[in-house]
Image (cartoon, rainbow, N blue to C red; front, side, top):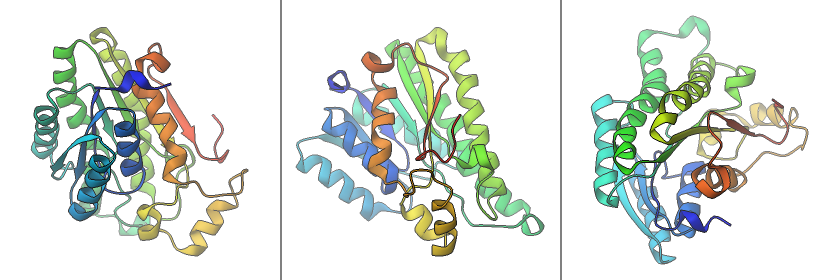
Length: 254
């Protein structure tokens, strides 16, 4: 079904764990050459790369902090160099950083959250578009969050706002880049069982979130794979741009 992904050159930022790791492996399973990106989780990224290669796939490792503009540009350019070009960028790197109530927000946490979740998307997309224009086509896929729709959980003001930016930036970039034959879409995961929630959510918070999901279960990274495959495939979504697909068990219905 997704055999047109064979030979595609794809960078997935934040692909050492969680959704990013599952998506990187899925692209490789479809025959794409994948750049696995990491910042602090080098060992985990190496494990993802090893799994891809063991299954007969092609991948390169790229490290760096996407929250820093020059680093984000280098990461994209290094991935493109290692893959021989770039057809798809998945802006997946992001984090809540920590739960902070309004009264405790300061410049430092503001900059950390916005740089990681907003600056990285803008700069990486800017760099990727240059490579895609040379190729005459491309696809950018941004990872938003159900927090962009419902405001997120306790202490998630900055994260929810940043992901709302990603949601709307997806639509704006879709308009701007359409003339270059670059499609821009987004995936908005709900509550997914990943290291994100292991780090930021207590069992009580998670149970409260689970109760708001009509399907009654917390999702897994594998539940998100199909959406990313769909948006990367010209055969499946060649006339789709500016869309954000909600993957949340019914927690939010657009």
